[in-house]
Length: 424
Image 1: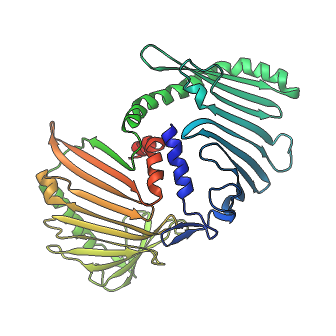
Image 2: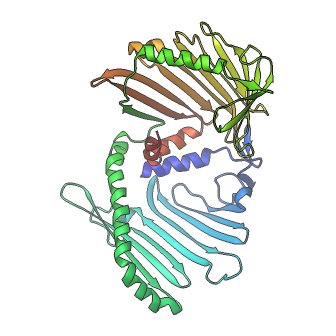
Image 3: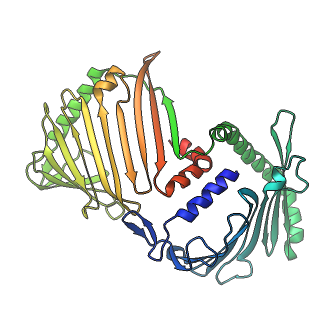
């Protein structure tokens, strides 16, 4: 845990936040701007326009106490948050998060709450066992409150025993009603808590020990195996050939694609003859006001040779292409994509499917590479025959940060690797 905290603090200090915004390569993101002081030092102040929030660094000491204050006000909803971190050298001592919320009119009295969360790392890892609950959470509303206390023990096998105590109650005029309501819903709340904690423990025991054993890594590696039903090369080639012919036989009337059933998109022929070199189309998914259209151009279309189409967004902030060496006997499929994604204008991605390798079970058949100024990712897919007419397909992925983001990936290797692994 000390290594994770140190890596996160390193990433924060090295993040390129300036008066202009968050600078990543040639891109400047205005979602967070430094408006006072020097980045990651006492007295620094930031503005987050989209959230109507300001962040102030009241204290910053990597070897002592740090405190960050956050205030957000949007549409009459005001949130104040304070994060306190105590470190001794490179050893985490405690974390405290407190804050309050105030809603807009009407009923401002009931639209407010306060909360406090404290984690005492010294107590949690005390060799003699914690004397006081090392983790506590308290939420207070004008008419109710909730308390959570977590205490750790350890058995003879070195496993933790974690005891969680939850208290709920009413305040002011609702105290008698809360007592009666608690008698009704107590069993259900206990069942929900038991189920949630049981899932959390199961996920922890499945993933975390392996992550801890590997330690901090500036490169995240994932690998999965799946067993789909196998198909023959002849069937796959016939499918590609039939698809190629079906596209060529599509009918257009007055420049629009004719479909036999309700389609999820519209397709217009803007220039040239259908599927001939130089033909240009615009594909607009329905509803058109929610998804931007795609412009498509045909540069080559040959059943026995190369077929290639190029595509781009109308404003040309995204562009790419895909090609196949032969529809009748395909051996290589290539594709590439570049442009702006999630605010980054320097994203590039390319991939290649080597079908000769796929059918020969000779090394990675599909390779994909992607990158932007923050980092790069790779994907490798290979297959091998398995019993019962199945394939064993191995998918390997890796993520690696660049420059200051290397420390962020290192922290993510222990903090975010589990959800990333499940997403893959």
